[in-house]
Amino acid sequence: MSAFENASKFVQACDGNLGWEGCKDYVVDGALFVAQAEALAEIKTVEAYCDWLVGLDKGPLKGNSCTLHSSSYDEANRTAVFFSTFTATHTGEGGPVEPTGKQTNSDYVYALTMNADGKVEKMCKVWNAPWCLKELGWM
Image 1 (cartoon, rainbow, N blue to C red):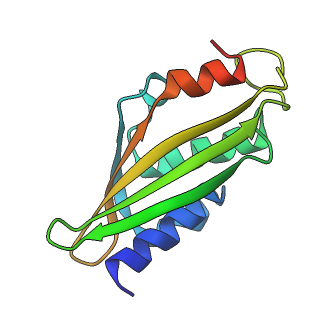
Image 2: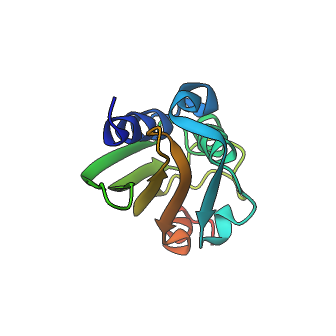
């Protein structure tokens, strides 16, 4: 399987709320996660990010979905890029406030650095977290 195929399968599993168990075969152990978003400041590994998404789906944002708009792969830099929209409504318990019934349609980009074996070694999420949180009524 090519690095881009592996990256694509990872994103499908990650955004499909399969958690670390559904994602780990596509990722190196201890893969780094980075984001310049306050909501994700404490998350440092891809494993923790995958499980954070599952927590949203089992709690305040049940039934959330992600729509992939575009993807590409830069062979020279071994980087896969995915542009998507996250759609969710705050109907479940466990958010920072009682369920608001408000919806977000929040765009984001994943940049995945792949290792020589075609596995994710670093994940960067580019996301306007305040926009999303305001739409949900959390800010």
